[in-house]
Length: 482
Ligand code: NAP
Image 1 (cartoon, rainbow, N blue to C red):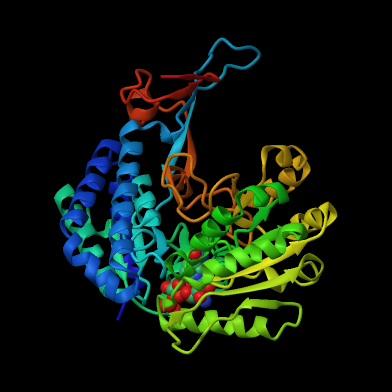
Image 2: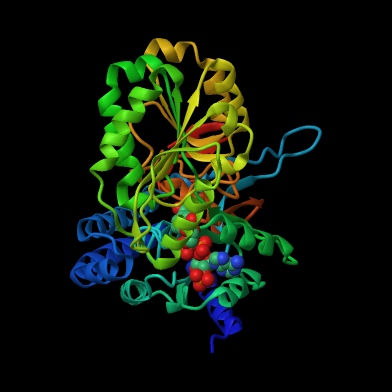
């Protein structure tokens, strides 16, 4: 029987210690964790392959991505300036009133709840970006494992506990829990929880967001709920690069059996190029074999969505999914006119898997109407020649309002983990477009600003001390220094 009160109580106690641990010590802890995960590669990888149906090469790569992002946060902590230290020194001589000494920085929120994702058993799960950015910020994590990969999750949790032990931190800075909806909802409702991070379905993310807002003390919910990641294509670009673009599109659509939140499920194609592009992508699709999806529930949801779309007469099917082997995700492609697409928002609902809708537009008016109608997205991609882009400044302006990342080259899958990455867009792709769940700025989700006014200098955190012992960049009286 899981007792959430005692779990949160231990977590809170651990927080009061952990929030004061220096960036250097947290950085060393994270490096140790990356090392322990690497040392356990040969046991983690087969477990994750078995539980996710993903190929060994992909899982090996995902473990590298996981340790890579741990090192990114370790480096961020070592550098230290991420706390946004800001100092307005006192001016006792100011008239008519003396000015107080005010010093502001980011401080960790407290115990946070993280839900693991099914489609990244490592990089968005137990020691994934949400857990690591919260730990880097100084927040204990209470982690709900995704039921699709329990053994992998336990193994990785064990690695985290080994690293905590080596660092000498309280073990309650990370708690691994398994359980269903009731446990998940109990975590979100618990009064000691200070934030929630989630990656998964729109239904799940929105339900947890609503629950968090019904609490007596509402808390921030960082739910990443997927996206259809539209690609806008233009005539000259397609004329010049038809085959490579068709190949790139199908590669991105079908990567990992389409089970990425950034896979492009929607592509807008000008009428003049529609037939040629359709032929090119249909030829590419024929070469893609179906492969097992993550779990039977996800495969079922994929085929249910396709079955519904097949009942819609507006769609013309270029390739129909073969649902003979239910766990296997078979690719599918349908075509629709822009005028029909504009009539019903169901045509921009995410179908999680290797399905795409090709929307054929006739003119600029339709393109602008599409951009207006489009829901919030993680990414939008534009494939246009330089001279075409010059004529699309208004469209680009509209599209900036609809996404977190706007690409002018390449495909949306393959999210770089770095300092400048933004993985989070306007609703419904996430519940908070001001945040990212990939990259260094993910740490900010688990912090709040605090200002110290006239605090005795010896009590100030190092980040705010006069002599800047951490050597970080700070905003001093309105000017960046350091
Ligand atoms: P999910 O159904 O959203 O579940 C994710 C996690 O949230 C699980 O731990 C689940 O708990 C929990 N959960 C879901 N609804 C809940 C609720 N109402 N109250 C409390 N907890 C709740 O996602 P999934 O199992 O990974 O896959 C289902 C669908 O999600 C896919 O078909 C796909 O459409 C979408 N998906 C999207 C992304 C993305 O990148 N945004 C990633 C993966 C999946 P239990 O399972 O224990 O009930």
